[in-house]
Each structure stands twice: as structure tokens, then as C-alpha cells.
Length: 223
Image 1 (cartoon, helix red, strand yellow):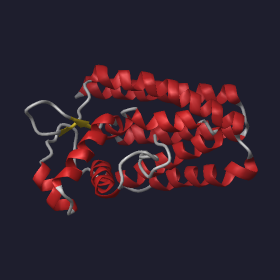
Image 2 (cartoon, rainbow, N blue to C red):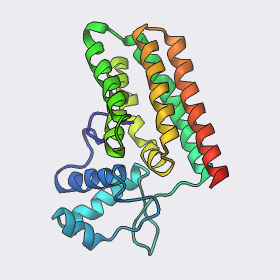
Image 3 (cartoon, helix red, strand yellow):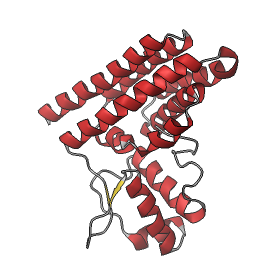
Image 4 (cartoon, helix red, strand yellow):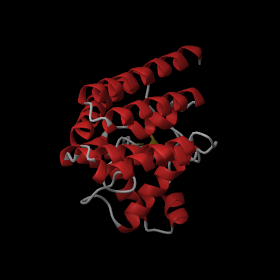
């Protein structure tokens, strides 16, 4: 879920070297090079991204505000890890925002303005679902949410949605079964939006988050 920036960093967010570090860490999460709970070393990040340590510190602050990094006193930063209760709290907030985004997209949908973006987003999801590339699917998912936000036109929602800690939840609780659920549910949301059926879009969004809850609970009970 994101706003105007590539990964939700809209105007007023980080820039320059700080943005480079932020996007690099998010890409590492998408591709499995970093994982929840993993510690981050300032000197290593500065060397890897060829930036100053101040840029790394600023990136940690921005990522902490996004719920990506945990900044604990007297300890090095770490990729945030959600326990089950926190995961469900994130989903409670995400459900309210996704339902608002879906309703707004259905109400504001204009085929002449929004069909190409929504169709491209759905096609991207379908393609990403056929290959074993977590990063590709993550990008396709963000493009889908961007298409919903564009159709809905709610600027405050575009600003707030990236602050929900969905990035960590998607990474920490990823599974092939959950990816299939997302593909099916996103198609249902897109269909309701195209039909400009506000009630159906709302129900599809609520059902999606409910399905994610069930999948996460089942995975937790078997792990």
C-alpha cells in the first residue's frame, strides 16, 4: 500500500541519499535479502549504498515511522517483527483503509481515465503470480493499490495508507497460498470497481482482509 512515491514516500518524505537507503532496504525485504528481526549495521549500510552515515540515520528514522524498522535504545536498528497480536492490529487498520480505498475507487471510477491503469495493475498481478519472484509480486501489489487510490482521488488516504505496516506483514507472513488468495481477492475488488458497485467493492475489500487473517492464523497454528 502506498502513495505517490515508488514505495510510498510522497512529497515531504526523504530525498537524495536518504531515499536511496530507504528504497534499498525495502527492495531487500521484497527480495528476501533482509528478514524481520534482522539487525542493521550503520557502517555496513553506509558502505553498501555509498552514502554518509547521517543519511543512514535519517533513513532509519523514516523507516521507523513507516513501521519497517524498530529503533530500540542502546541496540542497533532491526527490521521490525510483528507478533500475531500486532499482525492482527495492523490488519484492523488496513481493513478500514482498504475498504475506504475500494469504495472510493468504485465511486470515482471513470473508464476513460482509470481503466488503463487498473487493467495494467491486474495484468501485472496475474503475471507476477506465475513466476517465483517475491519482489515482482510486491511491486505489482503496490501498483494495484496505486490504481485504486488514483480512481478514488482521496489525497488524505494517499498520504496515510503508506504508514500502515503492511510491508512487514506481507514479508513476514508470505506464503504461496496467501499469494493465491491475494490474486483472487484483488480480481474481485477490481471487478467491483469497474462496475462502479460501491457496496460490492466494500464487501470484496472486507472479505480480502478476512481471508488474510484466516491464512495468517492457520500458518501460526501449524508453525
